[in-house]
Amino acid sequence: MLRNYGSREKYIHDEVGGNSRLDELQAALLRVKLRHLDRWNARRREAARWYERAFAAQASPVIAPNVPAWAEPVWHQYVVRTDARQALIARLAACGVATGIHYPVPPHRSGAFLASMGACTLPIADTLARQVLSLPMGPHLTEADVATVVRALG
Figure 1: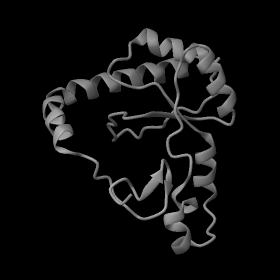
Figure 2: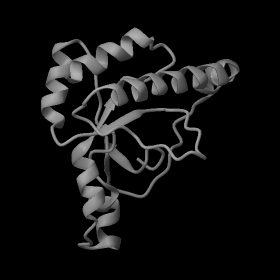
Figure 3: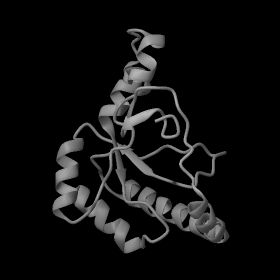
Figure 4: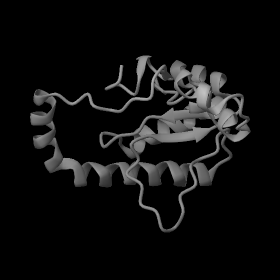
């Protein structure tokens, strides 16, 4: 548990832990994959620009990420916000588009932090946990793939 964010179950943290799941075999593979990292990050940025242009060109049921001018994200995830998350997940799935909900439980609602944070109120964190939806993202995406996702959103 301690090497997996203090978690027995994904996104439920019973203890305060870290991310220490890298074994020797994974480290050897990572050493090879790191040679491709800059190219893969550039492709992710390109995919994010495709999403951004597509969302700007039409009405969308999602709020796209806002990136400050000074930032240069590598887009590990492309997370949008929506009040119609379950309906969009179903619509995207019907079109063969996989989605994810990363971090559906805000830290202040997780076991590891309940005792220290008490019954604090963090309405923005709670709202975001209900709204976030991760769209497909990765260096493998093409502009046509992104267009398919955006069309499926409606």
